[in-house]
Length: 362
Image 1 (cartoon, rainbow, N blue to C red):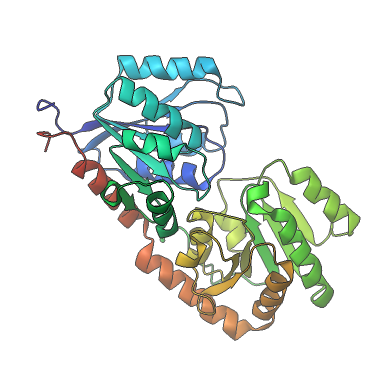
Image 2: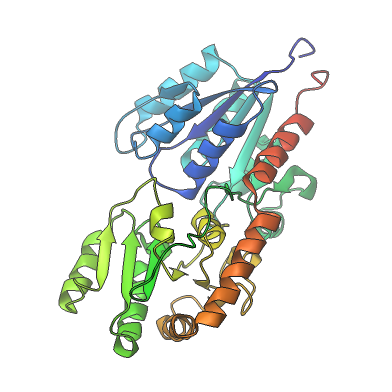
């Protein structure tokens, strides 16, 4: 491998390009990586085009193995053949299915460096069996690192934590915004993991006390119909807006007073960091990597998972107290600026890749 030199061929593998924090992380890497060090490509296993325009803006070559709604055996076959014919120096799979098959195929084909990822506390990636195939593992929260060590037996020197980063020059508060009514925002997938029904139950309690409050729900997912039924059942059509997922989430963050995240489990949610960068105090569930972002009572509040009453009570406290909300908004943004700048995230990822480069390439 001594003849390999920068820029190293790097293949990032995603399951899809639907809206999601991991997809956003991939886009940020592709946009900001040092091209004198890395020559990246993006390989996608199935359909899902939400974030394709953002990838296109990075100028990165993209290879699709299927446009189906699921990862087909034929897509995996095409993935294997692509690796066989175009073996990269670095193979970096993101999301669950790519992390399974990229490690198996990469090991069989002797890809020099396999950097796997673990970005969800309960991702079923067969880690106990497959982690030895990883040259190194990158996770986005200390809680995930601890799980990999304690539950899956991963060697500590084979894991690094890279906290999610956001563009703090783009995600900013809007000082010109005039609020006509208390506005609550949730943005994310409408799936069981995110527990959006608890969000609506909390809003029901908030509405009893603050009938002028509004709730914006931005996202796509299987629970959308169930949410819509709840809204109609409680005649919330004028108070709750269901908005399809969008790449332009900042405009909704700048319209909101607070951000709620009712997830049952997470890694280190990118959407939460973006909201904090926009100066939004957060009420979120105390789970997984979220307490690594939120200091209770300082830049937001933490509540037990499933506790809609606690989420409602703390939301009302924030919505009623302008000084408290403003103080927490400042603390939230300061936290992001200090610890979660996009440049830090990209540079640390690059450093980990280079440290694991094949012998004799540096």
